[in-house]
Image (cartoon, rainbow over all chains, first blue to last red):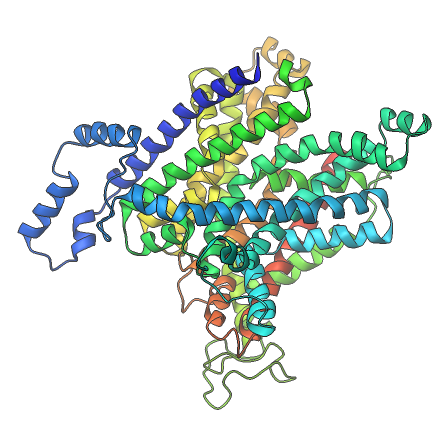
Length: 313
Length: 289
């Protein structure tokens, strides 16, 4: 199957998964006890205003009727209006999504820039003091929650030394690069520790492989052996892992945005929870599921390019 | 989250040359891990013995004091001793580690056994469920459930349990799939044993070790998750001393009293390291068998 066929197939596979997420969210929001109208308007709301709100939100119709209109809306990407902000949820999400995408994108690049060299150094000096130090760093990094790491960077680099802003975002793209650097570094460090640990394992395995010994024996320069043979083969499992980590990355973004007061979708999610704005929480979960699925698709494609053997499988 | 966990045991195997020995060699890593976990358990069981002060005693003449001999971790904005608060918080965070993993581990193991052994429609549905859990970030799913139930520790346990069992079941299902093809399983069937006996007496003991290893790592991950939710205000609620909540308390004093946030965070890191080192040790022990 060609690459286009593969992508098409994976795109089709996204549909049932996202449909399942949508069904789950519907079940969660509607079938749990508690009347959202009362929660929104408070205990002292009049019966008339409660009835009006229920009608506006469609809660007075049968569950099956609600379910069908809901599925229809999700399929056409009309996710309803925010209950508290009276703006279409799609609009709210689209406004804030670019910031979150930029944050996670920067974090991924930074994570690779940190993880790949460290893993290389550790693997080439396997068992040595440097390797041990890097592995211990990884252990500490893996045990450090994102929000704590963010706070440490905030206290030292932003509040202490004043090198970076304490939070928020800037005016344009270039200013955003500066504002988002510290949050992205926070996310990147926790991602890098996971990547580094696994890339190191993969590199050590490849370094001991026969084709590497052969390449060295045949007199290829060290740099060529490492760059063309070792790194390329070790990158395949790393790219897979990077893809699998996208969930944690998005979860981390939710927390990082809260720590650094960044108006992205993660912050929107937390704010909506406290405001009990279910329409936004529901819409966001579905949109994030679609995005994560798309990243899986991307990873699948990149894997195929890195390792043509997988095309056949 | 399962990916992090899967990565953890890999390291342990690389550093165990003494495979032929009968008794496991006492390696420093797992020993240190066990010591840390023991220390945390002591703090959790008897915080009043360990903590130098009451975690709730206000002292308005000694607010926001930096670390000193009298208060090694300093004091907070109400003059409460931070070391004592961190020690008392251990009780809540250990509770999080146990309560958020107990149901998933037990239920997930049984469910994984059943779908793995019987396959069929249940297995098909289960695989869809796995797709779903992989697609929606764990934290986002847990947050969405907490959003509906309302913030709080108990609701957090419900949310984590509702999602977490799937990771255990996936692990168990894979192991059972491999074990049920083995000869001893066929022998059991030939002997006419009923399925409960084959699955729970014969297959389960042979398939359980990866789940046990994952359980250790999962406890560390749940402490991280629980403290993150506490920090966001979705987990333990403020008067309760919980590491994440303590860090959130200190955030407003970030510039003037860094110790308020930094020390509780160190407790989280310590717990994370302790549990994952112990998990590595368990993994090495299991592998030796």
